[in-house]
Each structure stands twice: as C-alpha cells, then as structure tokens.
Length: 194
Image 1: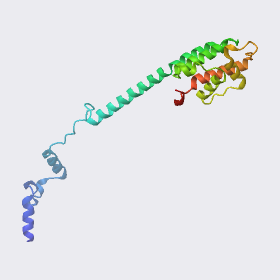
Image 2: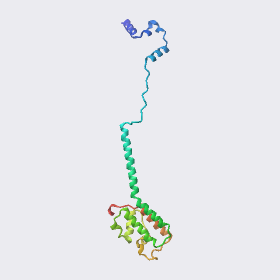
Image 3: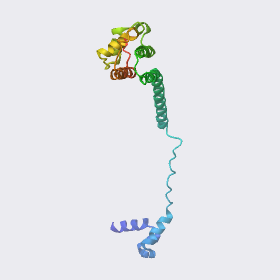
Image 4: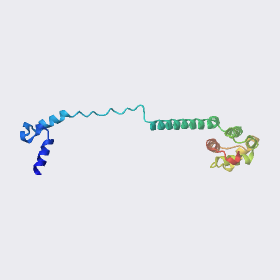
C-alpha cells in the first residue's frame, strides 16, 4: 500500500521534478522562473472614471440643484418682502441728520404710517389711527419697543401740537429717532391685525 502511494505521487509530479533525476539540477530560483513564465501576468483593472456617474449621483445632484434653487428663491423673496424697510430706513436717515424742529414730528409720523401700509397692515385700520391708539399700535407691532410718556405724547400730538407742546431737547429727539428706526426694522404683522 505504501508503494502504491509513492508511485501515485510520482505519477502526478511533472517529469522535470522527478526525484529519480535528482530534481533535474533545478534550484529554487529556476523553479520560480519556470512558474512565473507559465503564469499570465495579472493586469490591473482600468481606473474608475468619474463620468458618467452612477444613478445615485444623479439623484444627489438633482437634490443639490433643487436645494440651491429653493434657497435662492427664498433669499430673493425675503429681499423683495423687506424692500419697503430699506426705503423707509433711507427716509428715516434723511430725517435723523436734520436738527430737531417741531415740523419733523409729523414727517416722522407720516413715514411710520407709510411704512405700516407698505408692510401690509390694513389701510382702513392704519389711516385712522391718531393719538394714543397710534402709539399703542406702534408698541404692539414692535413687540419690545416701548415709548416713554413724553415720546408717546410727541408722536401722538403730531401736526396738531403747538410749538410749545413739541419742544424737546436733542437727547429726547435722538431717542425718538432710535425707537422709530427700531420699529421700522423689527415690526411684525400679527394675524389678528390683518
């Protein structure tokens, strides 16, 4: 049985490597050279190209384009929606560089009413507001904007006051300008006001 195995093993060996021949004068280097000559060299795969992309990338690109378009649309919409604020601030700046004069109070009131109308407050409600109702409207829509009693009195009197009634110092005038500018920037339209 032992001899049978040896014969079978010798039968599967290539003739060059037969132990009877003493391995035919082969060395390890010669064996490696003969083996490498018999094999076909391994070719590396072609590099993966970036184009055309896989179908998943089309979805990602479409989503990114949609998102960029949506953001651009919202930015343009916001800019258009707040364009009246920019115009009102430009007019407010013209008034704020002037030295205080009693005739500036009605102009300031007019600017605030025009701004309120352009913001979308109902004309029927805004046009008729005077006095304390007008100040209450300004304070309600600006949320955190609180006029002092003297500032409220000045704005509520408007063009109906005499020169003595609208006499203020420069500090009070600057405070009124600050609060009205703050209102232009921060006013909000409440649902119950529309």
